[in-house]
Length: 482
Image (cartoon, rainbow, N blue to C red):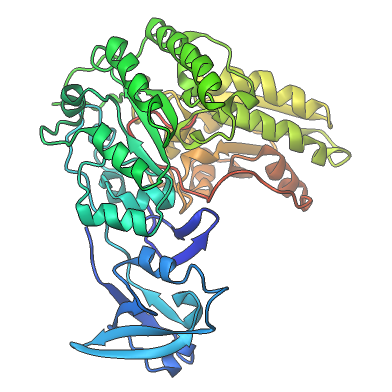
């Protein structure tokens, strides 16, 4: 994750720019730009920001919260600082710190003390960048980025803050509502009863999106059915994502876990479909959604795009492929009349999505011009053959398959495999992958149409894009994007 560079107001409310690191700290001023409003007011590097207006400041979320109504409030606010134990207050424009010339220190966030048997971080090989080893477990990241938390480390004060600042929605890893089973899965014998925590959030009017990572023989079957019963009985639970456990080839010293088989995937999907029909009658929403990976493993056809409603769990690989298809088919007309000369594309993906892309992409592009598309599959040698989603491909694996593939005008890499800093899990940029593969034009993208337009030197017509605040890809318990 990239270091936080200060708060801003996102499309979902207060949000953070980038992703952070790890427990709680004071908000320290790291730098003040010379000649800026803050510098003219006497703010110095090393000062600690402790309040804005009448609101205390503990972190960037507090800063965003305090400034959330700046457009409707006073033109100026009192910014309170401490310097060497002395308090001082200065009047500054009600604007973001960076607009005032202030660079705040990175926020520090809570890490996870659970010992989940399926934790993806524990299954990563050595030699990857340090940030991938950080197991965040902070409700503020859940609100800001949609990171999943287990609610095992919240205090009464935390719940009060969630209520006061309306930190909604939150994203919660449930896995099982049977407390004994859940504690076994989390490796935490003191985890509080999850239903009590969810009801507490519901009483505060907080919307919750939940996930169930299926570990065969532990939380499937009757446990799974009961979990769905319990979650769907809470109105505040807006959605439930069901994803298969992700298993790499680096599980030395970890518990034996069987993968989700095609048979189990089919059983889960049958149960999910039954629940969706019930929920549509009661809630006017399907509420329970299966990851694309379950359909692919079971050999079932993916539901249509509208099935996923407002795709609340797309970051969890739920509806990702249909959303991709929907976006491509809506935007491909932008290429009409643009591609006059033959254009060859190589699209790199992982095995799980390859056949879907073969069915969707080449026919769509052929309707608008002489475009030849070659879908190539990169085997995940870094994490192992059981990891079959494009979002977890390494740069080395993508470079290898590109080097082995006939050169094309443009090579497209899955955007989901790159974080907000534009690097893969093995710390390679698209340019570095291109050099390693001996290829010219290599682009990391989730938007094929935009990539083609850029290659042609054509600026795309502005269009409204759906979705919430942008978030970089993250490694979590499930297998991520397809």
